[in-house]
Length: 545
Image (cartoon, rainbow, N blue to C red; front, side, top):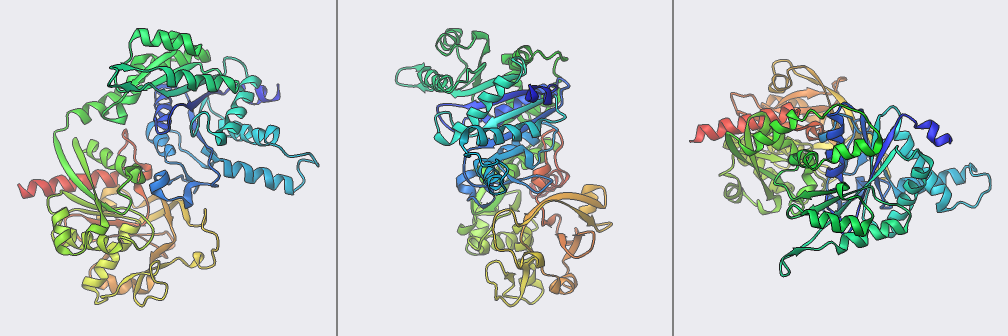
């Protein structure tokens, strides 16, 4: 009763996954959020991850994809990026919990004696902790969409599934819905879609006490009425609650596809929500622009995690958004920095492109290739955008070429380096633990009046999200400014260099930023830095034809 009273104004959608991972639970949940927000509801989203890492901040991007950073400095799962791109609600550290965080909290409470001598167990102590995290994230919302990471049947997911089973019992029957995302594989040799994996997936859900209310079926093609009826019979889900989600050529079609399936109507029916019809004009405009671009541009992203595109997921989408602002299609070409050994190899990979971008990253591997790419873009006046490490490598390249510092580099790669134009932040010098100790979250930045950066943002104070330990070394500030590098963005106290650029009479677009602007870009509101960058790339492309 206490739980029901506490959240009586909030309803919940729990999103689970079956058969295989990487089906798109995050996108499905985000799309549901977009549809319900378009109906006028106040939507929040949350991701519960079963792995034992406290957060993904120390995980290799090639294993788990990018780390998404929130305004309040949480290092979170990349699905939170999908959430922020699809709904207006800004995520926070309450939007992502891992098994590591849950167990860490329970153990701290046990050490403090908060359990009053009880035997601490998964049920009820761990499941209660999960429940409390869900309830804390729901405060003030009409609806909270909670995604359970992993796949049903994974042993590490069981405490989370048990927690939502208990929570559903404690709440009113019309306050929760379980949406189960599953795979219907198409067997080419048999020429038919197979439902058995989905049947077994739902069977596993029912074994642990959760009956899905809605099935969303990932397929290569739309499913027939007969297939829906068969699934309904064997999964105990009504036929009109079996939804088809075929593969799409852009993720921004997913809300429209699910709306056409009637998913938002069904959710409102099951949750007893009375709302207006969704206003989807913005999503329709986005899809129309993507399908009918007036122009096309190819951008080279030079990094070292290029084997897994999700390592740069927010960046990838922010470039697409920049294209939307310019009515252009953006073809993103990922270039392995280790393949750029000199000017000749840089030319072979980059000369045909309309722009060069060097993203954030960590470690020395590929750093010289990034510098080679930056040198090529600067020398040939190709529009360049450097983000975090990309800005730092641009400073190194400029110092080597114009400030008589041939060995300029970052002390990240050599702590004893003479001429470290990029150095460890003072507050980082005594840090011992790696996780959650970087400069994280949103910080203000003051832009130099009249600078290209100020013209792009159309204001002189901005707020952007950071994730770094190293910074521009102020020891070399005057030297590099005398050499022609403009420090166009500083922290409000003037101590940290946040943006650098070259004068537009020297280079049409050469900008670097210590922060990560990609984290704030949305398809309905492209980030101004990416919109301006794509516009410069299109102008450069026109000048060559």
